[in-house]
Image: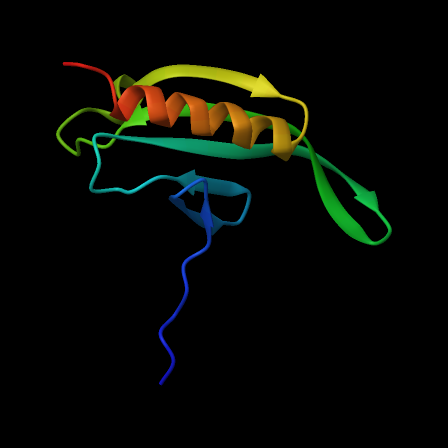
Length: 96
């Protein structure tokens, strides 16, 4: 049986559930959650026009509302993914 390939962006895995996209490894200290807030149809395909981003801690012992480190909204998935990649790189490579 062929090995299942994981979708990645800039070396980090992507998981999608409905309008939520999780970017990063759950085993790392941080992930970015992207929520598609609005979309428009372009040639019969839905295209995200408004995306909410949250840099979150993955520690299950922290209440979900206290996990959010920073958040913003972007116009379009491409712009949101670029910001998410920068946030995740900086957070995971910060000198503690």
